[in-house]
Image 1 (tube, chains in turn purple, red):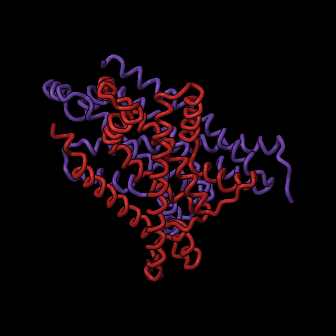
Image 2 (tube, rainbow over the protein chains, first blue to last red):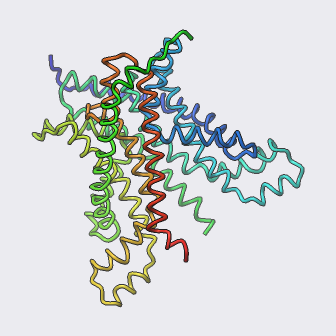
Length: 217
Length: 223
């Protein structure tokens, strides 16, 4: 039976936004932790660590996110875990975001002038102190605009979890479309809702980039 | 772990998988070429078109870059028929990929065009070249060279994103994998093999593009 598209249907889509946002937040948190480890390993002086991090980035940036989600989802089953879509979605996105954030932040860490490292070493700081008090605070400032830009990519990526059965905005759109059969309207609204989430972040990222770039000129 | 890996079924369908991979490359290649044409036109409008046209292009770029590719496919594949335009999954996938990569490439090419110094254009004009000739020889070709690395990584990104068109069963690599999966139930094995195939494809193309860069564009670095 075909249902008309009414306010209730719209409300259903609107409530699905919170799952998209919750998943994005969770993946960003997990991805940040993974990304920091990857970035530190990639810039470390220990060769095997550098190679391992490089391989990680290569694999996760060189394969489709959809495959990564499938592998987490089916892989967990194989290992005997009865994984629910929430955990599969969050884990898959975390691993993926870790690679991208790791690569972004590696660039930011390397952008800190070498003299700063040498000065910190000359002051007798060990690795942890050098990173914590000298390098990372400066890298953080450079990292903010591209990180905000990556958030847009991450929010859009959560739509793929619809394919492994996680009910977020895109999946909610499919459900409503199956019931109402108004694809243009339903997916139009879904696209608009994503746009409302992502566009402010895109603008903010561009704004920050110009602001931070200004003093360097 | 008592799971027994069985790759037999996967390798029995290696022919289908290779055909799927070939279709993925074909689809991405044609989408990239058509998308580049769209992007050059849009970048031209964005840098020197009349204001309303600029807004239109800006709107297109921002909408595409701030919405998920999966939703764009659904809009095109399920939405267009309700407007009377019915597309096969392959056509819908191609259209969606062109529309998507066109927006990203517009921004890349625009950045390239803006990196061309004004004096170059003026010199071209002074030599008596027409506006179109200046755009083609003095602006576009050097701009494309400047953004070549960004465009090639965009192609690899497009190829990886194309796995998403399996959601409308377009018979590319991921769709083939899904079909084999539903017949044999060896999900984990199949997705491992297909993931490796994608990785090989992206490594292959980045090596190929780097080779082309060295062969064609490296004179620019030797200055």
